[in-house]
Length: 434
Image (cartoon, rainbow, N blue to C red):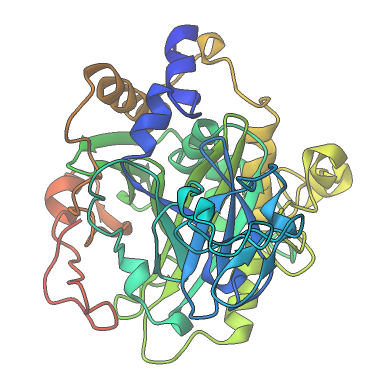
């Protein structure tokens, strides 16, 4: 549990808040590269309580500027994107990707008033099909070159979905390994609905251990197996909002062509989160449309499940009780909600916009949640000059899972499994590190 004061500290992200200031020390995922076309329609973006507009200009450069025109505060979502700038439709003031006013047709010829006008604009970069923004002050940190960003475009799927709750309860769902054996299970092996079967349907006490790292923490969830071994799943939390989770067991482990997965829980404001979801598949063959569709379907993000347009709101949202089906809940899936990600969002959104953590009762499987809260509070209260995740020590991190002898410490057995050097993401790694 947290005190109400500490809960406020770690959940509020608006301008001027301690958590908002901390978030601005990192590159922020803003939207998908595929959403922006040259001279195409502007896209609304909300980050850390700020309303912004993104656009790609005639030369392919990306602008991320405040939403409202500096003249009369009209939304630039209505603007014309043309000839290397975005033009307000009210009076025709035009801005470039840096927020500078470059044309003011309402002023006399030769007037210099436009040279004094500049809207807030944030630098951007594109990695892995995602547009990242730097919203901080001073020099930006190293680029967020995670392993998945170094895969070929045909080896990855990246999507985003609006989750209607605070960023921290969304993140805490992503570092909670124990819930999968309940929330995501399929009760009937004949069911065609997405979920986990087999050993996942046998609830047993699991042992969760956390190792603090330079990027945040690695944590292992160990599950005893009937043959006396243990199934160890190693996850990673990279500050401030990245999670990496293993998904290598689909029968046998294919060490040459592993699947890598993760989420990014980006605060839109105090009560809304944009979740970026990525899946990468190694191998010389590109990920085909059928495989992409299966991966998207299993997570509840198939076509028709998420609204078209800038909102990215789920079809299965809280206004319709996530379309829970009680007959399915009795016979096919534990939750009665279709889609693994939909199930996650449903339970987290059901807590309310910001959960009152002072009323919780945490157990032994909440070790990673507890460690994350303690880490965030320590960084916030000490005003850490070099917080975890700012330096690029996470570049080669990968989530993994393996079967180990019952008494084998996972740290020694798995700490040197993979190392994917930058620029080598399409090749088998030569050495190893968790």
